[in-house]
Length: 360
Image 1: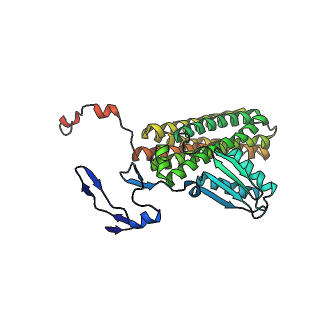
Image 2 (image 1 turned 135 degrees about the vertical axis):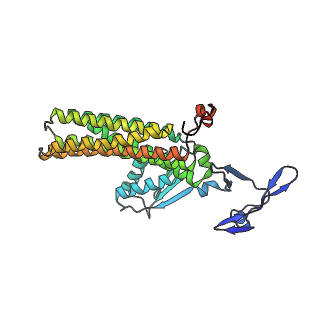
Image 3 (image 1 turned 135 degrees about the horizontal axis):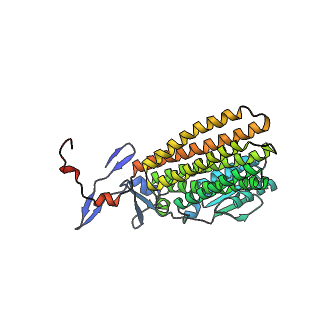
């Protein structure tokens, strides 16, 4: 046996006519309570490596997470802590307090369970609430989650601009409320990626490589931030009130919003198609919006009060949305270089360049 940098080397041996075997490190076997006759499972990885794992003797104990919180804990802090525990991906989450759990703490936990995808209240006692992930290891396909997030974000962008133009408070409130739907999909995707990184069995279920998981997580975070900017545009309805906006400014902002939405759709297409040229066009288009931004910003210098503030918020959010789309296009370029999609036409077409003379 050879050891180097935390890796254990084993020589492959051959037994019988066609069976290859290797020995296992004794410490690893004994630490997991394994012995002769126990079954190990193997998962091949995209990088050519092999992951070995054993079935847990008591998986329910290993997959249960107990969290101690205090009744006097700030509600937002408690909610963020629960989100972090949710993303960690434990099937059973037990939230406990020293002594009797307060009504306010219990309400935050119930609200958390209603907003997230998967957790359901399994049991309640005087001191604890136990949540179970009912989704399990059969999640929605991660690419499907990204597509769904894009549909929601696109609709939010459209409705936010509609609310801005018509000063419709009802549409604006609806955009703000829908932001939660995007957030919960993002947290759900992040939970699946975290679980896949921790457990090779889940990685096999989601049917993605580790680099692909990382790519989709970055795309999800980008979409979530664009949704936040749609909310910010919708919130300008309250700031603007009944202030009259020049039609020329409205038209220019509409054109900018359409360009940002197109850039986002094209960037997501590039993520699947691995089209580097198209991705570069998205990045270039986002930078061209800077010139439009400067033109509109110059017009805002003559505005005052809430009109100037509201329009500045809309302008900044549209610009940021376009640049987030540009970030996504750069992610698509990175993915295309790392794992280019095979071109069946190019693979079967005869090569003619070899017969050409130098300088032809």
